[in-house]
Amino acid sequence: MRLGGRLVQIETDNLSEGGAYCRSDVRFALMTRMEVSLELPVGAGREEVDSLISLQAVVVRCDPDPSARGSWSLALYFPDPGSDIHARLAGYVRTRRAAIADDTSGA
Image 1 (cartoon, rainbow, N blue to C red):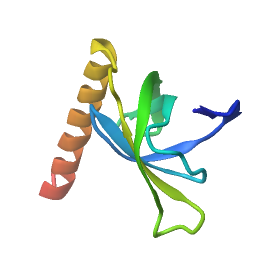
Image 2: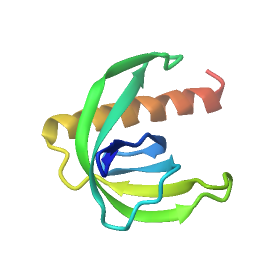
Image 3: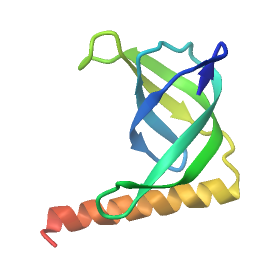
Image 4: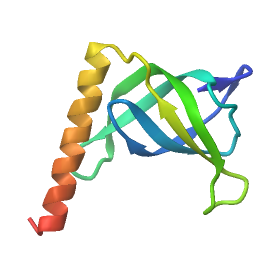
């Protein structure tokens, strides 16, 4: 994403159809609107990356990250991802949930 003309990288820890929980070295003001690009990994090892998804996000929380000094925990909301992007996010979340369930069941 870009902030003041500068490209800022944020790392996603948790992703859903409606938003994401991320980490950043940059603090963001609440309600900051931004364009984000997500790389959705595919495959069992998650080495391969599906095509890039770009969508609007709004910062709804920004707290100091307790595990890393100088980093920030961000909660992002996706206000209107559009039906195609929403479907791709939902498919990714379903696939990851199934993989986690398989991992925990010993399959």
